[in-house]
Length: 243
Image 1 (cartoon, helix red, strand yellow):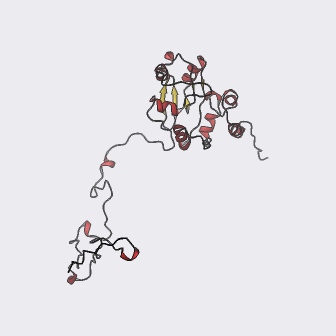
Image 2 (tube, one colour):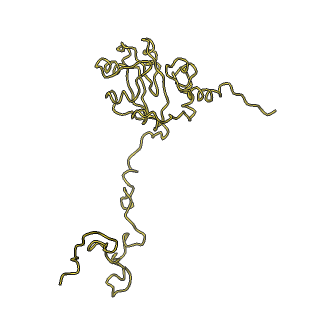
Image 3 (cartoon, helix red, strand yellow):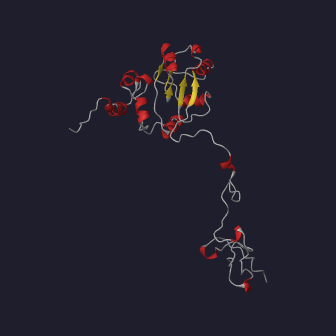
C-alpha cells in the first residue's frame, strides 16, 4: 500500500487531476476559542505591553518606541522646490573639446540636442533638460548650432559671435525622453506654466516660440507658429473695465 502523498503519474494534465501541492495548504490558526484549544486566554500574545494590544501592527519605519526619532532630532537647512527644474549644465569649453575629438558635430539643419550630448558622453544625465553655460567662452573656436532647454546670455553671445545659433526649446518629461531615444512619432508638448511661456516666447532668451526665432530657425514646425500666435496674444490683449 503506497502512502497517500504518493500519487500515480499521469500522461497528461487535466482539470480533473489538478490538486494543490503537498503541504501547501494549512488550516487557519484560530485564536481565543477557549483554554481547551491551547490558544485561549491571551491568544499567545502574553500579558500586557504594547505588542499585546489589539490593532498593533508592525511599527512604521523610523519608529523608536515613542521617543523623538532621529529624523526629527537632526536640524534641517533649506528646502526642496517641488516645481523647480534641475538642468544638466554644459560649458562651451567642454563642447569645443568634444568637437576637437570628433565626438560632436552640428549644422543649422541638424543642431546639437540632448541626445547627441548624452550619446557622445559629454553629459551623463539629462535631468530636466540641458542648460548651456558660458564658462570657457574664450576657448570656443568652432561655430556651433545647439538647441538646449535654457542658455545663459554669456553663452548666447559667445556662440552667435562665431556665427552659430542657440534656440532654447521647451521639453517636458515625455518630450525629453522621446528626444533622447530619437522618437519622432509623437507631438511634443507646449509650455503651460506662465514662467515657461514668458521664457520661450522671448527672443532675448532665444526662445523657439518667439516670432523672431520662427523667422530665423531653419527647421520650423507649422504648429509652432500657431502656438506662438496664441501664447503672445497677452502682450496686445486688452480687457474692458467696468464703468
